[in-house]
Length: 140
Image 1 (tube, rainbow, N blue to C red):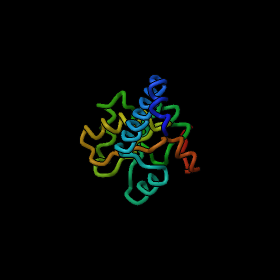
Image 2 (cartoon, one colour):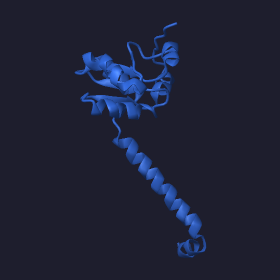
Image 3 (cartoon, helix red, strand yellow):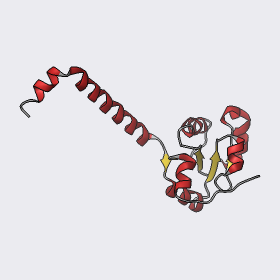
Image 4 (cartoon, rainbow, N blue to C red):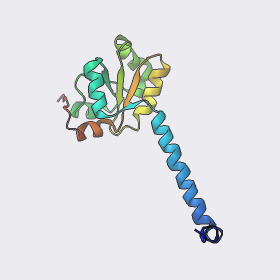
């Protein structure tokens, strides 16, 4: 422990990089915790117990290849017209997902801003769903 101050003064770039990465890690962790996301297991419970509606924001071809059962296909690029599809589900929780769970955050935020009261995200997206071996529906 006596040599820590000496190390810090001899390697300021290394110490600065360490604290920079540590800050980035903390910021990412706090950001993830603040998102309203559910694990795949929690998502199944939401869909079954509360009649949640899965909202798939992936491309049409990906949707047809396999999606959560009863999912509504939603194209965020056409938000104004697509949001009408979800009006009948306004009182139900919406589970928004993409392939990996990254793009769904923006779509979920847009739906919340449009007045949908319970919008949640599937953490890890359909990749996490598949990892749990949960069923998918396909349209060929």
